[in-house]
Length: 57
Image 1 (cartoon, rainbow, N blue to C red):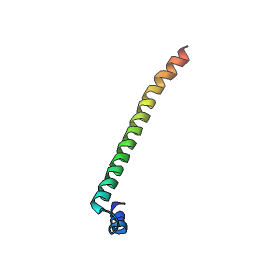
Image 2 (cartoon, helix red, strand yellow):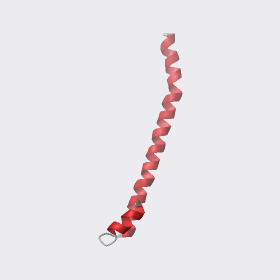
Image 3 (cartoon, helix red, strand yellow):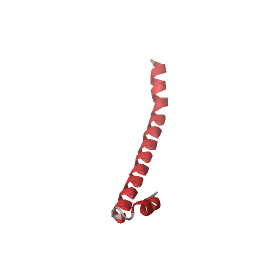
Image 4 (spheres, rainbow, N blue to C red):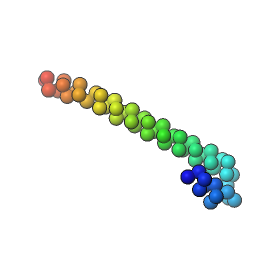
């Protein structure tokens, strides 16, 4: 993605700033995906305990 941005926008924008911004977005998305996976894992680990409490009541 960053390479495509370089060729298409090089004459209109500061290429280094554009690439830096794209890389920050890509890294941020990776962090978000990791956070979502952590939440899903935590919910899955908690779910059986909740089911046991509900079935005991």
